[in-house]
Image 1: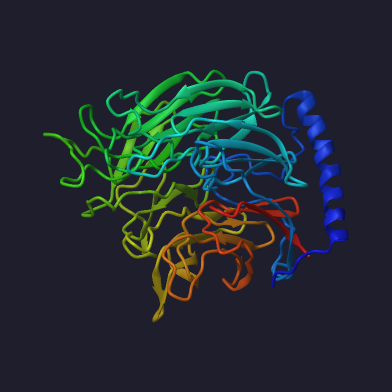
Image 2: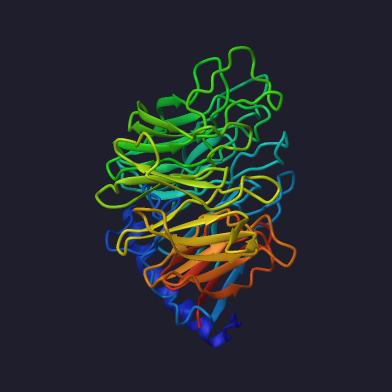
Amino acid sequence: MFKQGSLARTRRLTLLYGLVGAVLAAQLWAAGAAPAAVTVGWPQYMRGPQHDSVSRSTAFTPSNAGSVSRVWHWQPPAIAGKPAPDLDASPTVVAGRVYIGAESGGFYALNEATGAVVWKIQLDTEPAVTCQAQGITSTAAVLPDPVTSATTVYVSGARYLYALAAATGAIIWKTRIGPADKSNPDAYYNWSSPTVVGGHIYVGLSSSCDHPLIRGGVVELNQHTGQVLHTWHSVPAGSIGGSVWSSVAASPSGRDLWVSTGNECSPPLEACGAGNKVGRSLSIVHLSGSLKVIKAWRVPGDTGHNRDFGSSPTLFGTGTPPSEVGACNKNGTYYALAAKPLGSSPLWADAIGNPGGAKGACLASAVWDGKTGALYLSSNNTTIGTTSYGGSIRRVDPQTGAYLWETGLPCTVIGTPTLNRAGVLAAGTRDGCLSQGRSGAYLIDASTGAILNTLPVGGSRVFSQPIFDQRTLLVATETRGLFDFAPS
């Protein structure tokens, strides 16, 4: 179980973090580039373009995960005239700094050792339309600029993608992603976390909350300048739908991309107009790095307002890049297909959750441990045996989808779990709690599925991905701030 660490131990951890962080930061900020020797970190959403969600950290083990201490806690401040400072974005961690944005539009760089704010900047927000007012929901990427090698933060506000100097937060460039619609300027919102690969940035085009829908797709930008290079639309000109809420998966070279798309326009829920085409809605799509369609696969026989993909694709299986790709649809089914070229039909499909509705939807991506060949899937409400659960996490055979173990949780797993190299999974829960359940965060034995610990995050909903780094675990909660835990 959790126990509060002693003051002396916390000071020792702080000193250790401070020394390590000082050395790394001195190298990083003096040279303007991340040192090549740093192997532990979390530079972008789901760790990297292939979306494996596996940390190189080994500090938390199945033996010590039952007893951890809180090192620090940080609560983003309310900002006058802005949305509430909820944390739905996941932390990004590079060279002793934690980068995270809030729904208030405030973006922060924190000292990883202490949680102290190093710098902050206010980015753009969007007023309430069909969603609540909101600012930053997506996760930042922190990587060297391909031309200058200066470490740069790439983060989405409500409408703009920003490049910020990692040392100071100064704006290097900003580019509007969503369509500039004067009649409805708030129809678009940046849900998609930027994927940075091969000198390019890829972000999704999506509506704010369906009403109204926009013409969905993916935008490709030059990483150095922010110039828009190409735009791919998931539906034909004159149509709406097919939002890309999720984030693009990519091969290491960036020559191949995989994207999951959202719902088609569904009257009478949305006003589509005569002749609206569904295009590549409800699909997993294989694109070239310049956004040319190579192949697409659409979920069979499952149309409608809430049957889209909100889960980002994960690459898994053998080879480099891995040979298979998969994502969970809001119909509760995880689909696995051959990746390159994209399969014409699933290799396997697992009904891991119930169709999305009042109890949440299947939005989490898979976790892929290429070193051990382990694949982990998470879901919304489900049944294991004869018992109903608000959510779940399962280890499955990546070749067949067969369950190797199944663990029920009291609430829906919305954000993707994280695995560390010592065999511990960290998972947060948010919606769809059963009557006896409460949202929170869990440590789970990756080899058996046993729950090792329930972390004290004040019962707040957890939408973001917990992050292992060095000797720490960062858990961002919606309303109770960011927690930093370490093994006791």
